[in-house]
Structure formats: C-alpha cells, structure tokens
Image (tube, rainbow, N blue to C red; front, side, top):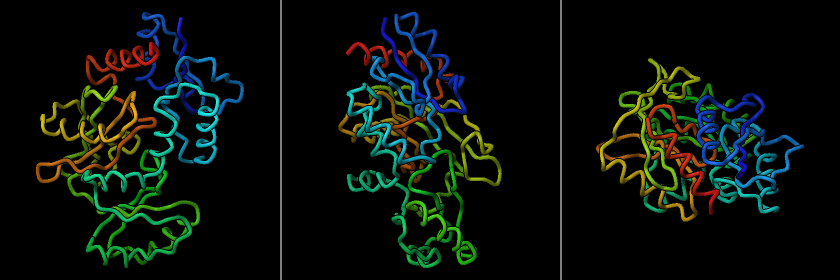
Length: 288
C-alpha cells in the first residue's frame, strides 16, 4: 500500500475539513494518507511515496525556515508536490513580474526590495493611483495587507518603513472589481480545470478570505475565462498537481491577482466532483 503525507502546520494537526475528505477516498484506492506537520523533526520524509503541501499556513511567518525545509526534501529526493523549485518560486509574490513579462495581465504593481527606502505618497502620485493595496512580498491569507490612499499615505509611511525592515513590499493598484464583482478562484488538477468559485468580501472590506468575513459560492465561469485561466497555468513549464488561479474580471478579461501553487484552499466540498478529481490526480502521481 502506498503512503502519502498531507502537510499541515501546528494549528491544524488534523488537516482542514476539506482535506480530511481525501483520507477515506484514497484509502479505498490502496493509499494511506496521513497528516504531518512540516516542521516536525521526527518525520522520516523519505518514507513517503508522495508529500503534498496542504495547510502549511505559517510558512510566510518563517520563510527562511520553510525554504530550508523544502531544500532538504529536494536534497534527499523526497517526492514533494508541487515541486520544490515551483514552491520556492511561488513563495515570493515578485513571481508576478515574471508572469507579466510573459504577457499575462496582472494588477498593476510596484515591488520594493527589503531595506530599500520607498515613499508611499510619491509612489501613488507617480502611478496616478488614488488607492492601493500594500502587502509583504511573502504573505498569505491577507497577512499585513492594507489599503493606502492618497489621503492617508503620509500618516501611514511609518508602517511601510517598518515593513521594509523585515520584508520586501508590493504596492498594488486597488482593483475596484474586488468589491463590486468579486474574485474568481479557478481550480486545476494536473493542469486540467476542475471547478471555480466566486469569492466576495463582506460589506466595507476588500479581503475575500473567510477568516476576514469573506464568503464564496460555486459558479460556472464563462468558457473564455476558463481558457484564459488555463493559459496562466500552462505558462508554468513544470508539472503541477494542483493550482489555483485567483483573478478578477475587468472589461471582459481576467486580471491575475495570485497564482497559488503552495497551499491553497481547493474548495473540495463545493463541487460534487472536486474531491474525486483531486484524488485521481494524486493517485496518478503516486502511480508514476
């Protein structure tokens, strides 16, 4: 019987409700799946036939330690999904610049390296933005993500200065459609489209994550949107066990907000075939 690890973190030692759905399904296909915390020292990672990152949701708080752990798995040839080089590339949101250089539409943004001085008001004025989202380049679940405006930029300069002592920062044009239309999440397994949800923020907020009061519903997107989302996934040369394309509809096209390749929520309980499709992708990967 094959054995796989579903990787989580200390606050979710038993996985998310979504990921626990996988356990019985995989067991019926002669695969034993178990939760393992990524920073647990006693785990023998090379004993697994596959290691699948799921809810390791503190990696952005300990990026160097997490990256070293990924490197360690790569060194011993442990079968990590997604692949180590993909995970490390996707950790830092400056990957968006690479995708933009390939012609993919992304929300307009300015990346500022750690310890580099940056004057928030001057950035907004230079770009002609009245409002922007500020966030660390390594972040998850809207961690330290906030809205800057022309009016509050000077009074919030100290926040930017403090952030830049610890991390790089992205200043991104505020996308109004997040609040008016919502943000799409397109889910792919082995680069094949599975399902999509439309996420919305609570009234007065811009964050669509459930922990910030956001909510979502299963939706059938236009075929043109699925095609565009797939082109984003296909821009990655390496194989992908899973991918989530977070994008906003603007003027009939998708604008990419994030390409989630590390530990995204996959909304397995929202679609009747989602669990089966993810499990089949895992089974095929373990078989290879």
